[in-house]
Length: 355
Ligand code: CP
Image 1 (cartoon, protein in one colour):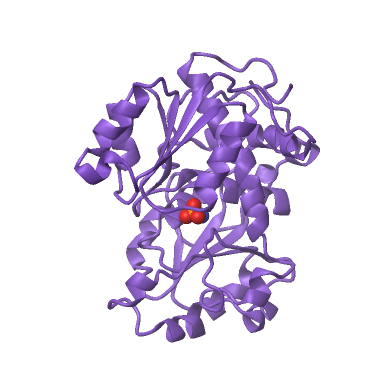
Image 2 (spheres, helix red, strand yellow; image 1 turned 135 degrees about the horizontal axis):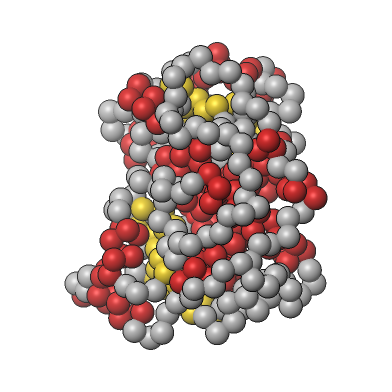
């Protein structure tokens, strides 16, 4: 299947030339791609690092087809009818879990929401045994969130069904990056050549890692910003610029993605105080005035209002935070559809957005 792209997405800007870079960057930064002949052959989605630029664009284009489904009075298509999807979330989530649940339901799948609280994990059952027992009930796709990096990869070797990574420790959060790129492309018309800042605890952030892979693969110019303890120079090996001076970076940026301050880390030795962090790296109205007038402010959520992001900015006209959440649904419908199609040997076929 190749979902019909919307008019806007039929002209993606992945055609625009990137701006000249001043530093040597990683070899993955190849800008222009067309997804027209690309198919998706992966029955798992475990990370962005292993995806080609064409595969990323193919997911975004497929999501564009599914976005329209959510605007209908009956928000449902039969693409996954008869399939069973399990949300195996062993870490808390609001957006990702709800989004995957709704996405699967809109594709007509049966959905099982597994919660670790109240499960036999408390009796010592391993995650592997838990997943294999659930799979034995006839499951097609397991969506896994876990605090350990590599958990989704591990699970994909333990079960026969498809596995989607919904966040594994500090490693990757692939669908967050895909929905972020979808939103950037929707708002800016392109990704290649855009200047994107990611601000916060980059070293420990799976959102940052997945975003960096995805943005660089599609030719964006990425700067990571934050204190030296959270944004080490070694990140340059991922093909990004490193800055510890937010105010110097702000005026150049097309997109600024603010990450959540993780209080648990702030309480340790990485930064003197949350107040000082906000003073140096928080996005507020004063800083926004120094940004480009069309700057896009992003945040994956959950937000610490008044810390990394002032409420007036979070709720202001340049914020795309709720749009990111809306787009996440279409992106996850696309991911569920594509991994299921790959698992069952189908190539692009009928339009799955048809009733
Ligand atoms: N952005 C994100 O992953 O949010 P949740 O933790 O609520 O799923």
